[in-house]
Image (tube, rainbow, N blue to C red; front, side, top):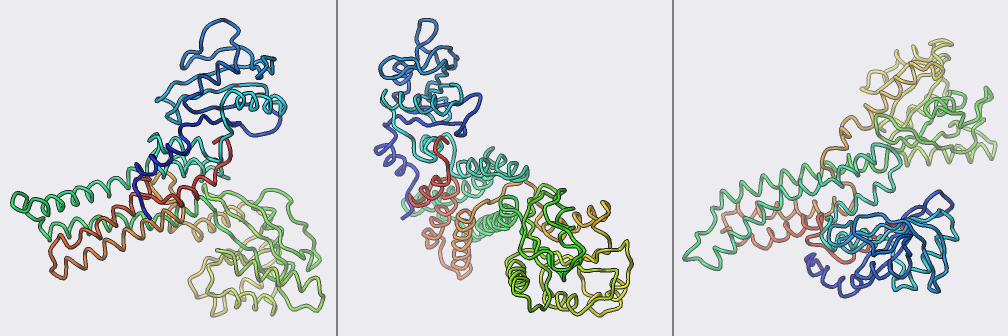
Length: 472
């Protein structure tokens, strides 16, 4: 069931918002500083019971005080800095207390115990961010962006999350939902007061819904970019033995990740690594050389190579361009035909027999991304990176600053809105009166409202905030 955010907030407030929570806000383990954070109505009470200022006087909001953290018996746990923030101008919308102690696991454990003895309870995963959402400090798309920012593995993903945290997706959804809700209000007024408010013009309503549908479709298209920025692109390096696959992996990663040998069949298992090209994460998998073999271990490696190739979004097919293309090379070319692939004819420094053989073949006339070069030359590695960017994500233009969808639940919500818009347009084009469309327009508004949290299921909230660590 989809309910309004106000209903969810009322239910959550009755369940948890009356309690004061505490958790470690910095990563666990040893460090210079650890931050223990409290949020809730009793944060000031917790401060009075656990923090003893070096100079007399109560804590003032937004002023840092030096003193000591003490346990329930008044024994000193550690020197500390205390920061108190009074509601509502806080990250969670509640009173917040931060105790900055030395980053000792023992000190942290004792400080958390002291706070619990003073009336706080341990926070659940994501509960600080969830309270920020429930108290109207952020919307649901921004809350989801917080988790993505914490999990970001490269700068592109971090920038994309920062963009959504700044409200780019929220603003894009609001640009669709505000005129939709205005149209619904007009329809409702026409139904309730038919003598005073004229019914909306069906043609004008159809034009509006069509424009909103186009905007929602643009958001739906951004899901591919969002997924690329968030998850990266998987690329399998495949080809016959001794073509230079492991050397390519090492060159792309900038480190000796794979063992390289002139002996064919050195790679027996898959090796992986990741690199960033043009702000996008590329997950690379080096595979065993694909060829017919009776040797059991090598055959197992070949089978794993085939599975890795089947699961990858992009294939980098490495072939020896200096020697005649043997049957193993021709088989790999045929088996990967029709896949999104980059053909790299390697070992240009040793000759071009295989490359010329390819140019003379019918297959070379197909529109494919092909490079003749050497993985030992930095200029050819740069050419390879540019080709991967063009082949892998140039069509979705990964600009982290643009409004974009970043998760499957967001894409599903927009898909539901588009389906509702389509039903409205079908109804209007069939000549039915505008008020018949109210139900579908409400569904479209509710679907878009899921992105901000204005209309959302409790199950979706649980799924989103379960991604968070304790303390965030």
